[in-house]
Length: 583
Image 1 (tube, rainbow, N blue to C red):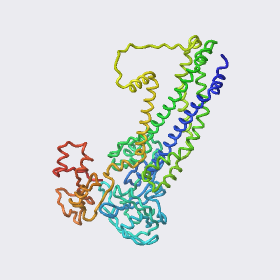
Image 2 (image 1 turned 90 degrees about the vertical axis):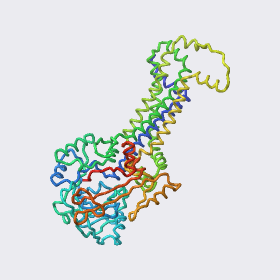
Image 3 (image 1 turned 120 degrees about the vertical axis):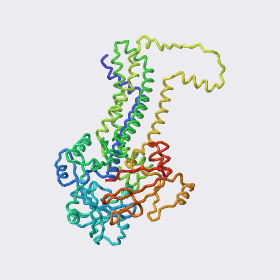
Image 4 (image 1 turned 120 degrees about the horizontal axis):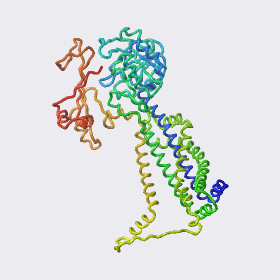
């Protein structure tokens, strides 16, 4: 048979309904896979922006580096980016909030957009210039404006107690008011920016050290490069600060001695997208399979005739495959175009169901702008989407092609040879005829019954996957694990009494109350602690801190780590946990 390829096209044109149904399935499946692919790309980019807003555009930071270590890092070809800054010291704004001043060298300020975004004025450029947020200025009681002078008393402590703390008072010129950055409130530290050259004027040379931000040229070798630096430059393990949120967003493997270091960079967002896309393709494959199965059964005599005049099994295979391929060549480009055009609108609608603050923006308009900035055409994802759809369609066509190829010429041309086998059944009383008849229908075609059940399972799976999808968008979820409840109330002057705590617990609108008591003991001029006596001597600059937790906090932090006996002693106040000094 020489014209079987032409026959495939003629059969498509003669069976318009079947062709249209398969074409619709191909278009919709390609459209949905394109939307999933584009959405994963956009959401991944937005998740990276979240991570940059939280911890900066850096992989890690080496703390308190000297000039020689800085020079060695700058000259190393394994690093694609090296930024440097100088920590100027800190100022206590309140018992729970501290101001830290940073001098960013060269263009390092650009990698910290959340703490260097200017609301009014400009960033400092010359020595003794400063930029602070509006909240910080209120804490300081500053009532001036841009160009006015502000005096700050700061204290700088060096890590590992290599020298005594250095205190100084300096007068700065306010050149800019920064946007309020509430992310710093979670750690109790907010940042101010001073102009380049300020450290040389205010700090002794022995107190000038650098914080070095890095990005590696090869993401896969990130941890190996960091380990090499620690050995070659004799960097203490506690002087390496990993930007864990950003590393997780990029999928970079790392090792960090931190409670948050439980995400090895594997993107669960991508897994959710692949799951949804696979279910969509499976559904489309089932549709194509059913349509072709019915189509082949209707044309069984025609295939028998073709076999009788000399057609081979491989040629009948090719007829079915060519039909599906032609429909895919038409439907896949259409589905790609529709998917790309609708991806942005669908993503805006889906993200509109959650709070814009999840993406670190103020309102829905800023969220739409953020989506638009990241909605670029990704050719690789489009090609991958089309290839996967084509593969699934051809795979779904194989059973029908096999059925057509196995047609016996004699049996097909003589008519349907249907054998009915009746099993011997015992006579039973039918209690519910409707249920009995329904069971017979389900058993009559077990294949369709299985497909129906599979479709229901798929729809439920997609629903559950989409329900949990929004939680994967939050790059800051690791930071929320350290805070219980929806709101946090702090009284910095006198605290809360036991009666206040009981009143909160009895409130019908409050489900649970997790409370913390905090006491800070600082050294006086003689190096002694006021209000408490210790059997050991603190080093210069060290403080003694006591933190008390109620039962809710103990259950949350230590409930699955300690035996019941030890946990009970902690709750009753007969035991304590001692944390090593913070370097």
